[in-house]
Image: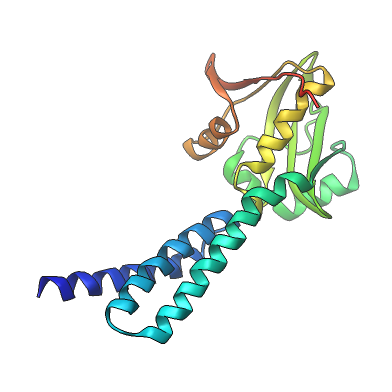
Length: 207
């Protein structure tokens, strides 16, 4: 009796994981979690001889792997930086559209703070994937916001953007993370703890 019970648990758990994936904002996380759920369902359906459903879930699993590979490898080649100022119309439109979500991660961010003399978009194709804003003092930037829209929250935007900042003569960028999730993102893109903040030392990116 133990084996059928365990098998049913795998089926229910796989279904729950697959359904949960549709509520995730990040495309990478969505594909990864859905693939995990489908893999469990493949095992369950095959074990109970539900072969048509096995094939369906196996195909979905393979599609997830394919698109996950594209998401992890293709986006980084499509990114490019577009400098802006906080007075630009496109900046104000982006802030207006995402203000509530930005406030979740950067509650002290003030979009119209005149001290913010560093602002730039990171585009992927024709879409604004992220916005970085800060205060530049000499060769240092004190970041006030680094916001990516949900589908690009896989750290690839940050890795691309920060790997090219050293080319402009900047040497250090730091940020005060408001919560553990935001701090975890900055650590993933190379920031290290420094004097109560997270900081990244920049280097020239040799081409």
